[in-house]
Image 1 (cartoon, rainbow, N blue to C red):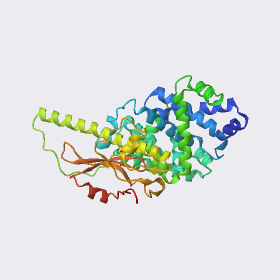
Image 2: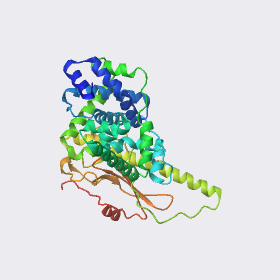
Image 3: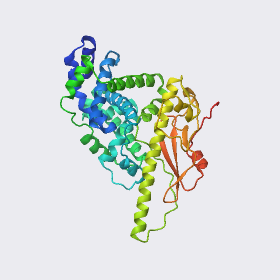
Image 4: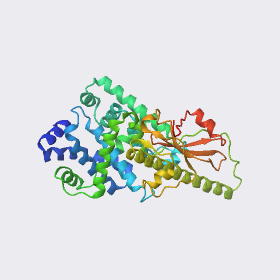
Length: 401
């Protein structure tokens, strides 16, 4: 039976065998996507359970033309994002590899560098592009099979795969990863789907279909994913921002190249001192842009609880117990107002550093968080960031406008 036939059979007859077959077909895909995002096998198992519970609950409402692999990748993104949000206060994950790849464009591309960015890049694609990539490189379908699934000609299917692949390449390049489409194909095809732990399929079938007891944290993921699905359906204008917002630890670094260079080191001690200073600055930058993303998330949570109204101050957010361990130091709120009034969320600054930080090479950096949820680390040769913001077309919406 085709995927959606199984979904319909389960929805209409509560067929455990039909649902078990869906789990068998797609568990590895879902588990692998979750593992890439939460970076912890046990958390990935929990996310996988949540995704298939969501599938069970949404089975009656899925359109007949749904590409299930693409839908499951999106659902995994939502559930993993909720897991990340719950875990971000408990642990600070190492992101040095990502930051190194973002700030050092000469670094060699490897799967370990691509993997943390893959699901965010997939989320940035439109539904058709995401589906063709999922079918071609996650499920290894042929052009003929893709054409059949999407009701296209074989030639059109091949062209859409090529266009979607090029969009992925550009997305990676924007994040400092110089990568060819051939490398993406090889890396994704070889590594994107890994075997899920033995026994997880049976556990998922029992919890999703039979209603067996699940942990509180799993139920929280289910509710969170369902809530985001409902939110994105109602507010399609900012769907990309929501997806990006919930991706902790995968932030964009925007660099305005500096022409100022550090004087050459004359001895080993100076070289070592420079390396230590650069490593510390990179680590501080990781913390800063991650903190900006976390603040942006709390602003979304606040707005969701206040009829779309974004707060005017950080203190208001902290007073509402939306966050307990984020620092207000050097942050300033730039934009406020109703969520629906932000015409260009991706370019509208939500928060930014009050004062720039100076890097070891003499250039200056400022962290920004935007209404759509992504964060950027902008670099300039001097501390005139007003000019940089104008040049990049950054927007602001002060309270009352």
